[in-house]
Length: 406
Image (cartoon, rainbow, N blue to C red; front, side, top):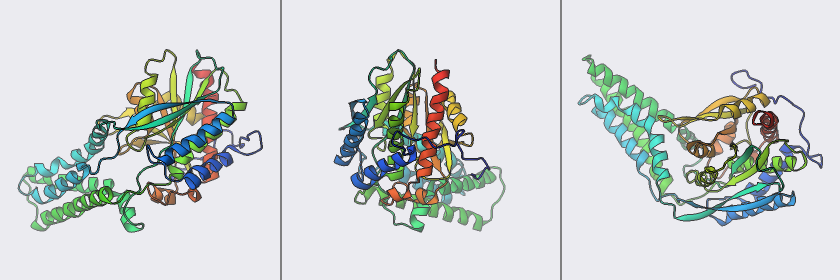
């Protein structure tokens, strides 16, 4: 049961077996062991990413799929992006400055609400100076006039957090929550001052101290994370788990036709640098005369709850496709919505190009949460049961969509 009391159980709880008697979850986990255990870190454009892509291509080709590589361009991570550090400085100044100008504090919550949108905008405008590739696969002979459903997962892995394990890393994962709450508290004091109500000196001093601690922490972690020697995550949960599920589902549908639905399988590159692989594929779909929808699988390897992304963005948010979400819910009635406020997955790139998209994730594993974007994201974190449920959610959704999309 999840915290809301909903049952994390698929509509059909019977495990789906592949031709050799192995469950979808078992097969997906075997792929995770190779990708995150043997291949290891797979940063965009690296030899590791290429090795992982070659492994996936061999698996798909052995199942009878036709595969193709789509060359993409992506923007590497800059040496230093001062955006969040400057926001931390604004929090420090706002905390100490509200007694002189309450408006300095009142604007802080809006600033931190806008930061993810500003960051997304900045990422999309970085020059695309490096090369990578997407891998796409389909069974030959499918009717090209049928509605197409693409199952998508990103193959690359992110840069590892430089902070040490323990309290520093736990605080890091709560940073945006801490600074936003601090900003709201300072803004509330600014409103009191604008109304002409006096505040004791110790309250103003406390506001300055709180702004200094929260803003100083944000500045410090940005400097440490961005200037430390880069290390990359092995990416077991994020996102060998999604890739493993896509490969297991491809094996299932190689022997079980989905009927009047054309299935494709997409493994994107350069997701961690700014959704560049998904963006390139979305651009290639823009002129398609046939209906195309996409379901992304990201971080589906650990936890006791399945979630679907309902919206992406803060000030200018986009809703994911309701028809796809309802199909997922028909398979996993207990799945709960998730709003991507401070980060985006591949589904956001498709939505921005007008392509209906959905995305599923798993949650509920504190250990996997602490390992996110760290060198501790290893295959031992991945749970076969969670992989099975994610795969079964897709199978159930396909069973619905093959009738609804025709």
